[in-house]
Length: 440
Image (cartoon, rainbow, N blue to C red; front, side, top):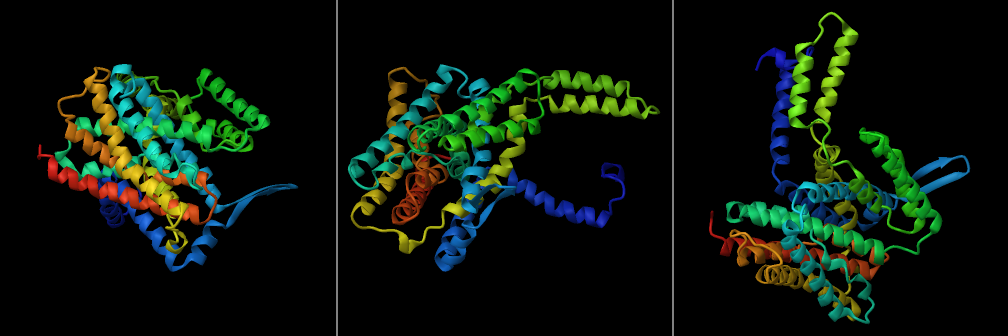
């Protein structure tokens, strides 16, 4: 590599040191399982911290953060900004991925979506029914939706660790299933885990959505310009009593999903400007470079570009911070008697038994009666494997538990059940995959 491959005024030893640091990081980021590992480390750290030094753990997440402008004050604990602020970015990426899958992915047609749709519906209904059967009429019954969710990072991480034992079609099934699962979780949160709805807040949120749609119709393609109407939507949902993180989903679904230039037009436009690149006229040179940059930016859709830019931040920053803030279960706070025992059993059974049972039975039934088509690689054993790792609930399960219960023994018990159930599903998935999947 020559000196022209680097910016001027860089010092070679420092450059080599930076490359030595960056290269392993880039390799780690390229591995899907890494995000699950980071999430696991954050979870263990939260558990250790919450039990070794509970006072400092609670004090940190209850630190008030806000703004004061004259007589107006908006102040919330750090825990609020993680769960309702930072997780909005997570839901925004979820919305982008849902929009992309609907446009050109596994949800683009009814036939493509049939198998993951059947699997996802079975994987949501069966855990909820098992939980409700164990907790109907009990204090923890409100948490019926907790075992419904699948954590994409951990589930994909397990399949990645199994390597060539897992057919590519099963990975696609799991990803599509998880996307539909996210849609179901979002609908459940909006309908069952939001406070009483305020008309003024809804009107404010609708005004923000209208501003987004008008800007999109006007051809505004710069993501930063959508931050202000996005904040308006978030604030309106908060005032309305709906969960403000739903703003992320709304904005993600409203993001343009078609590229302006596309790869071929990008290549043609770039080549044209390069062929006519002025050397002595600086303003014209800058204008040509600006056109080349616009062509580069619009070679893919805004949705694709934002997923590419934000997904590492969500996987390696937002989700680990969320785990650190929410997985810190004080083991002494959990209860295993009376209704607490049934709550614990319902969540664990829902994740470990309900998820694989619902995913496997409904997807195979849909394929048997002709409602869905199953590829040759997606064998019954492979679908059972997807169902088992689908029982790793974690992120969304913790999120729903936070909405279902106030701080106290019920929430601590629910969190511990989520960790236990997800851990059992993870180990069971690895064991089943190693035992039954022949190396491809």
